Length: 432
Ligand code: HAM
Image 1 (cartoon, helix red, strand yellow):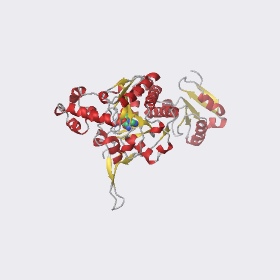
Image 2 (tube, helix red, strand yellow; image 1 turned 180 degrees about the vertical axis):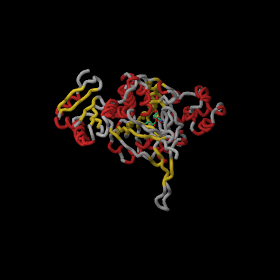
Image 3 (cartoon, helix red, strand yellow; image 1 turned 120 degrees about the vertical axis):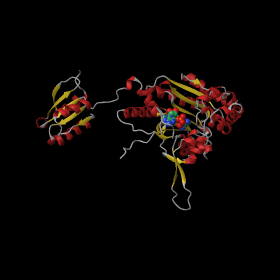
Image 4 (tube, helix red, strand yellow; image 1 turned 135 degrees about the vertical axis):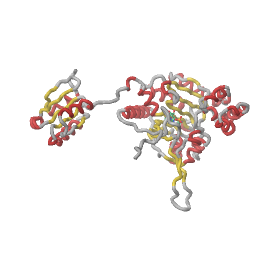
């Protein structure tokens, strides 16, 4: 029989690495709380049309990368529903915002999420078919200030603080503006004209995009197309005064807060909902998949999926990539944490009293490994040395006298400790 393995592009996350995942999520939750964000959990699958209308039919994500299936119709009269594993979470959050009429509160909604996303991409280092995002969205009616450039700058400042707090050094914030829909339409016309004489030399995808959505040509990864793309006009020259003023206010606030950034004129991002500010935080240590996170403003997304006017801005961090970056750093090489003690019952009749002792110590806050009375003492010592800082021996004599034998591995010192003092003695081992 062939052995079953995790499906291509998916993977198991195992200890001790999962300790790092948990540390990242705990830090992110603490930072989100300081900025007064609340958690949202949306379903892992949605109606396919949410992504087609929200993210855009022409994007790689929707046209090539979604895991989509036809759900069986419940009744003869019903049309089968097309469902899709979420490739990203922004469309789902905005759908929930509309569905629960969150705009009617008149307040800005500040929501964060942590969870798996799914894209049928070619798997490689830092790129998976199931991956995890930690993201946040700030969305609300214009009267709540949702269009203000201060919101953009605050989100970017929060991200800079979060990356610093996670211990990620050497990141770069790349920033751009893709303007309003009218700016984009103007830029698309400019691009279409500029592509006309050169498109025949480009890849088939670009030839199609040059007609349907020229902006998407800037997402092309085909090496041979890059010299042509480098000569295309930049979007900054197509922005109207409002878009320019908005962008200038974002950068002025970042300057005031001391958040460094670089302008990247080609950063249009691979999702159609973006308007005005777009950004990525990149890291040199990641190789080809160098984006730690990406995001931007999406002032028209709610209306595109049938909701009220609700401008917003948000981001999603690739948690897998945060882990890769942190693992490459020296301080995270040894993630294994040893238990405070290993309890070794001497004989199977001591198993039950050993469980009682383990319960006592665990309730006192200690991390305890419980051995087994069927182990020979040598085997207990070997197991204890691998998993714990100390071994506690529990034989008939120890049980009767209430005086336990404890050996601390780092010092090699063996002592007798009264049961009542055991927890505090294991919690504060004698100095080496
Ligand atoms: P995105 O740029 O498609 O944006 O993804 C955000 C981040 O998710 C990327 O920068 C990367 O770190 C990670 N990521 C994406 N695809 C993969 C993959 N196949 N394997 C591993 N990591 C991956 C969005 O998803 C938008 N929803 C972000 C956003 C929120 N914009 C506004 N609000």
